[in-house]
Length: 414
Image (cartoon, rainbow, N blue to C red; front, side, top):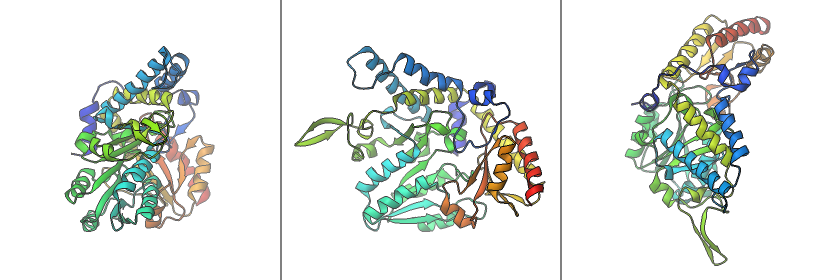
């Protein structure tokens, strides 16, 4: 069972698809074609209202106040943890709030990796990974003597499963893999990879930053040990993210930051630490953003997720079909079952030049290596790609506008 199937089970509803009117920035800019959703999504009004309402009605620090506002803020903060847990089908005590997916991976690398890895242990990373799921492991490998083993790809961008099987062995301690590539939209066969990793006793971390908005997740069914995602890529605010970890692993992991609220008792003779998740949430948390994240997840859970997935797939197919009529343009990464992300390369035009022309037509896309340098190196793409990433509020008119603008632009540049 793939993660997209989990989504249907958890979130099926039959409300109509949300349109641009639900998103204040898009409503205020009707000419804007926002196709940079893999970098950040626009926010529905209910999310903006939730954060503003918290500041206007309940603003107080959490877990500290001896007053009504403090109690209300703490209740809202912990209720948000419960919301996240419901959304991913987890126990609330396994949900740790972070500043984003990047910080969540760094937390696992520093705490779990720093305490569990030793010289000669092996960390398997797919070539698809974002820098955020590479660099923290390189840093912990330097400190511990562990070894990074990259998992190569097939020509279509999918994981080379034969090579993956050959890399797995008794020294494999961790496999870190994306739910969906931020650069190509390719979705690795997680169920198969997780089962193979666990068969050799390895832990698995899944980076869900791109996948969760499109596919959802059921961490109980997934079988991984850690799952991370960012709020701002799932229609929530910036500065907030989530680490889910198995309770038994979180209980054994040492703190990675020290400060208030992550302790039970402090003296100059020593400190005892709070249980998870508080042990990993030192200092004042992003409590307003946490409440807004909960609003985003509640809003998304109330949508018809199956209809959204079908809509995004249809838009991607419309784009892919249209690209076939443009000379000198191709999509990189054509593995079946990929998400609604298209990385484009051009025969003689530079992606940056194309993006500038598109911006003049009010079409926003992303260019560069998309924080996936090893992936681009493996594909021989020194100039990177132009990335088109879709979301539920995009329309067939957006794709038509993009294809027409690409055709006009390429006539000038090629």
